[in-house]
Amino acid sequence: MSIIDTRIPVRAVVSFSEAGYSAEDILREYPTLTPADIEAALAFHAEKQACRPKARKRADVMALLEDLESRLAALEARIPPGPSPEQPAHMAEEIAESEAEATRRLR
Image (tube, rainbow, N blue to C red; front, top):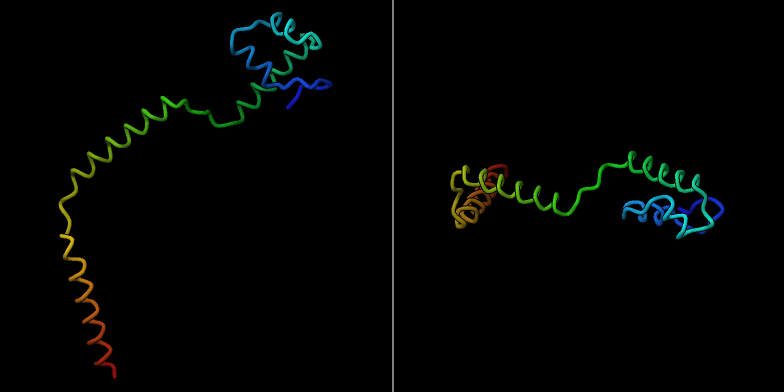
């Protein structure tokens, strides 16, 4: 999105502002802008950001992921051991035999 009647992206003004540039500094970088343009660009950006879910920083996401992995490990430790790998195949054979027996009985 560009500032009206210019080819200057709103993001450029926002980036300068976030980097610590004052409105006067931005005006020196973009002499075709007015103080009102800068104010409008920053207001537009702020309003747009307020409408979006807050973006998480990578560090926040990584910390959340580590916390979730830790919780998952704690939950998995509480689960009793399941059937052995051989048991599901054995159970499948029993089910197949039971179904075959039921089919024979229906005939």
